[in-house]
Image (cartoon, rainbow, N blue to C red):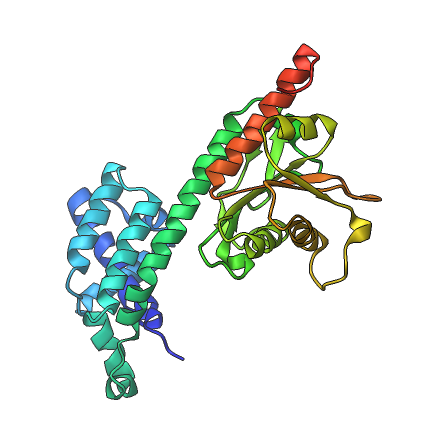
Length: 321
């Protein structure tokens, strides 16, 4: 079990850091202490890296050009940390996919050459589409979160357990195929706020609810939880959304979380998954509404409309319309 990443950490990264350090010293006049701060290492580590070049360590093709770009970006202040990580990871992928790093790895482990190993090439090719889909989902989640944060009325529909928004990949099977918000959406100074970036596998409860919904309706890909009360119920009806409810006491034991079981029970009873499933709660359990849709944007828009309808009705003293 010796993946090529081991070679990258042990042999490639030290040389790249050494080349960047040399560029910063010779072309930009930086001292070792400043270089250490920029690279996130100690000053003695910088000296160690530079000594690798004095020993005549072999430079892989492309490392010198990359080091020059990184050094220039650091010196000018135009290179962000994420930019530098992308540079390094992109080069790493290319070197592993049938490139010099692949040959280096096979020299260290001859059995891989005998087996005709092309794992990295096959893996990156096969996973590219899935990685792009994960990126699309996360970008969609960020846009939906921004919409919610911009809505001043949203806190009116936030339950005590706080809000989470989830979006699943096509064919999702586990919580790790579902993106959510770590820490959920909370209320800060009267506004909805998500303090962490969306990520996959971050919401076990809401992911379970969404996966259950997807079993009943394959077009569903996203969900959000909001408060449930009479005003919210009226707003949902005025919006023309279909609603199904379940009581905790009526749930059969299926070895699954109660909310997920409730979603399936409602869908089975109605013979379709409604737009909204309401968990009426119980002793010590807050009533909650689960809104479903095809995208995170769609469910965010629904929730925002509910918040606006309820708030408007409360201001005017009428029922939502």
